[in-house]
Image (tube, rainbow, N blue to C red; front, side):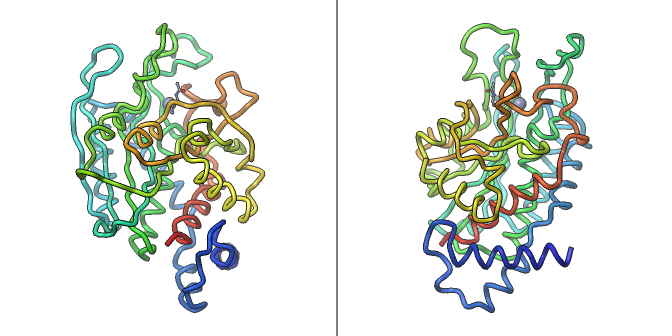
Length: 329
Ligand code: AHN
Ligand code: ZN
């Protein structure tokens, strides 16, 4: 722990000097910076535990008791870290006509600041294991340890730091609901608008009229061992400067092996609805060019469980996000 803290301090100091691609850091005294950076050591164990806690609630499928209990816990955790929390509740309609009671959890830090950024992840879990190798299991739900809980786990740990030491800008963390109730694999036709229903709702019903943020960063599937992040197509198209910022930051931290400087696929995800709301946004999402789905090997299978969550991946992503937000002004 001691060593990793010292190591973090050094890389964060370096990050502030080089500013991860911008000119940040020139105004902070070394003492302030050192103090801040010690406080801001991302704790991968805590992120991991946040993932495990979500999975332990059970399947986080809209309309279930586990879903309600998880929403309650997430909102409480964010409030405990000092966020002003909005629970945005609505009923949305799934691909098959099912009415889904959904709840976007919006955690606002320093809501009075107009200079702000948006971080997001989806907290619901998928009702179908439609890519499971066991055909009989395909109608069954999944744990969604990586697909959902990993991004939220990282953002809860980021929230803890933001609460302890305010960054120079305001931060909103939105945990979107009903991302993963999209039409299963056996439904024909273009089903792209059946995904990301919570963020679709938010994009047309912002939590504050005229809500603005400089940019958004979505985390989706950030916890599978050794699976990298590529420059996703829509992120590149609508927010290439943010992809540059984040990928440069990762490279400066020594993670260019995981933040691969190559084009990935085009992914229908919550970031598209942030973009539709007029905010440039990117998706940090694991892409495996060797898997037939393009995602991690356990994607939308019963094996997307805690056994396949890698603390060190959570750590990498957490460090990158922390460095980006604390070098921003
Ligand atoms: C598809 O491309 C079908 N879905 C990507 C969005 C997603 C699903 N993220 C997590 N699960
Ligand atoms: Zn999914």
